[in-house]
Structure formats: structure tokens, C-alpha cells
Image 1 (tube, rainbow, N blue to C red):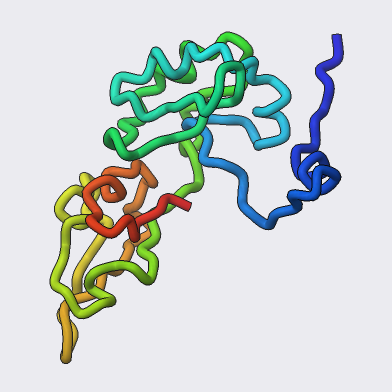
Image 2 (cartoon, rainbow, N blue to C red):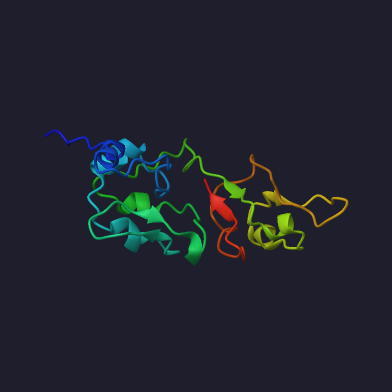
Length: 164
């Protein structure tokens, strides 16, 4: 049995909603977007399996996305274990995903206000704040340490932190 291939960008284009937006943030160990969307049935098993409740279903029977407003991903793998269709495949040799944190222009430190909330919550110590003359320290991401877990996103008072 062949699974139909759905090109969501093409559908959006023909509906007059062409966009340059990146694919939504999918749960850890998700297959590439095309394959993930083709296999995911929207059953919600990964949502109920997630102990930190950060996997959301935007609508019933739609592929899940990540919502770090509840906390961070611990990469426990329970979502992949619960995924019966095989859209999430945990391979111990692979990183769970390529995502990293990024601080946008609304970061308080960039507005000359002292804030280090993102660094305070990072379990990997991936955000550093080197001193700088003439203003508060700006966050610097140590990419080799960042797992993209999202722990830094929820505590940011301006929503400047994104996982990309």
C-alpha cells in the first residue's frame, strides 16, 4: 500500500497563501517533514505520552507541533515509543533534532535592560553573557552545547527566544 505524498507548500501556493515560513517544529526524532506529514495520522499518542506536555495538536487529526510554553523537552523518547505510524523514529546514534535557540531583536538586553532569564533556565549552560562596555551583557549561544530543548523560551519576558 502506497502512502500518498502531500506537498503542503504547493497546496498553500494554489490557495493563494504562498509563504517562505519554515516547517513547523515537530517532536524529537521526527522524520523529514515530507515523510513525517505523510506517515503521521494525528492520533495524538505522542501528545499523551509526553511527560512535560510540550507536544500539541493544533487541530484533531493534524500532525503535532512543539509548544515550549509548558516547559522543555527532556528527550526521554516516550513520544517516539508511542508513535505507532512510525513518523517518529528514535535512533540512538542520531541527535533528536537539529534545532537551536536564537534570541531576537526584542531581547531586553538588546534594549539596554539587564536580563538573563534565558541563561538561568538553560540546563546545558549554552547561553553565556560576556561583559560588554556601555550596556548589559548580550546573550551568546554556545551552539555546541545547545540541544534546542526549549527551556530558555518560556521564561523570556519578551518572547525573544525561539527554537529554530
